Figure 1 (cartoon, rainbow, N blue to C red):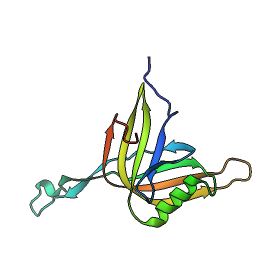
Figure 2 (spheres, rainbow, N blue to C red):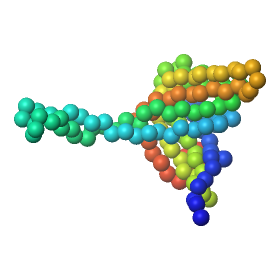
Figure 3 (cartoon, rainbow, N blue to C red):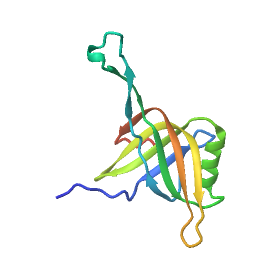
Figure 4 (cartoon, helix red, strand yellow):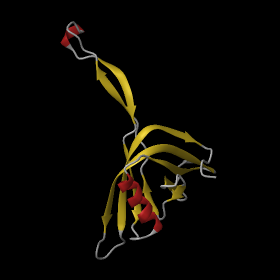
Amino acid sequence: MANVRIGYGAGLWLEDDAGTLVEVAEVISIGLPNPQQNDVLATHFKSPGRQNEYVPGLIDNGEVQFGVNYIAGSASDLLINEALTGGEPRDVVVAVPAGASMQYFEFSAIVKGYEKEVPIDDRQTATITMRVNGEVTQSSTNPIT
């Protein structure tokens, strides 16, 4: 039997100006951090065979994107705009179903973009782009309650 899970029940929380984690409403897709280890050039004048050499560098957790149903003027719309224009990193929590429990990803991020789409014959959606700032922790302990 496969252990595949669907994302139903997942959630996204973003810190507001008062430092409180607030759940973003009507999330329809969640991107998780994608850690990539940088490589640092270590080549020198006598590197064997005139070949580049590398050593492991720092880990970059990249950018994440979240899709939401766009509701202009809603509490979530105001929260995201506040985070975008505030220009400061915010705490973020993502909850992902993991069988009978949840896994929580906690990190700091800078809201970089808030792209809205208003089609003539479909739901209004938006994509929130965040730059992960520093370490990401993952655990089964709920940091919200």
